[in-house]
Image (cartoon, rainbow, N blue to C red; front, side):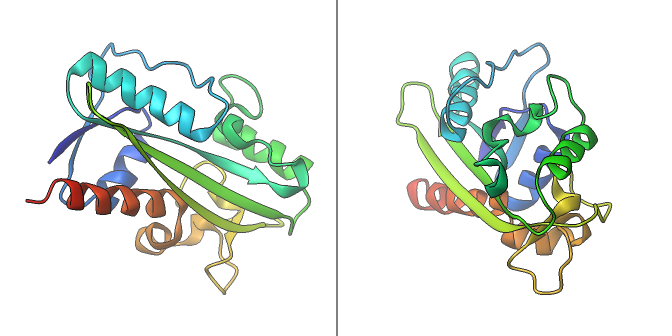
Length: 192
């Protein structure tokens, strides 16, 4: 099965390529403009991207929207995770702002919604979440985004997401959980 992945994010392309076994992911063609992420929810943003890619390319497409929610910040940055420190902010700038505003040890939740769309066909969304806490210091060189400061509750030794192997992270991450739900549905809806 071949699907277009509506993203320009190389990290997501690599991660989802590992997670969606048996699915060949194609990046967006050059020059394709994604719609702005101006929806009120992760699902709205993911669906807008998947719909746009499916309609423009005439074939099935998937997209995701994901982010981190800090309990101490009332759920922020949420859908604005990639722009938390402002438009065009780097991962390091976004992470620094989160660490500045939320206390170490406070509760965090990663959320990912994967959307599937075909031209003229029903659409589906699949959500995954991973809970944890904010590390006192950023640690690790793996992962991206907020991973160096996210201590997942599923790992008992206190490592951050950025200190986990790809296999460990994929097993517990928000994106891994959403991807497995999507893959299960694809296998059920389109056997063989």
